[in-house]
Image (tube, rainbow, N blue to C red; front, side, top):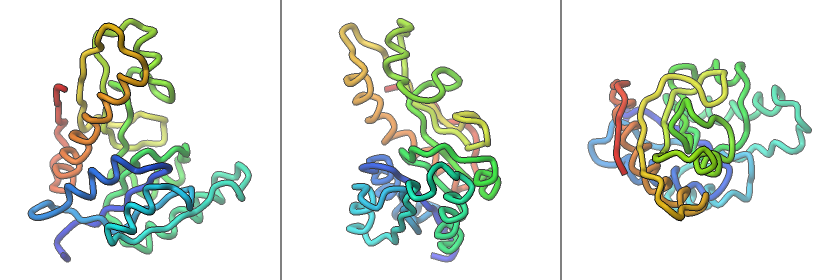
Length: 200
């Protein structure tokens, strides 16, 4: 175990990408999960992680009333205590400050539901449909202080079909997220930062 990289995964909801990552970290994989952390103690992802025997923690952002620095000072503690080598954001819905990102610069990953640099932020599927795009997808990137920025480590593309809604597009892209994120993490944990490109 000692030669395996330790991975902390941050979630805000059901944690389907977290589950895909955890399930991939077996056998000859160069990493293992060491912590699943949420800003919501009721997050479904925490229950799934606990059921899989992974340590969990929650730091509720609400008592901090918008004081991001104070919230992040608490959020960072369980990550540091876990000894994580890599931090994966998997549907973590809080914007992180440069101070927090700086702790893990070069070893924090995020998955975003668009083909970055297109559609940073929210409502990516609706925006792709409104723009009349012929393809859409998801991106795994290194986290930097700028929102949804940082070196791209992988992308998966899906065609936009006639009659697609934001919901149908989101569902097809989620399937690709569950392929892409584990593939990128395996390579990243092994020291390979060359981008992965998948076609859905």
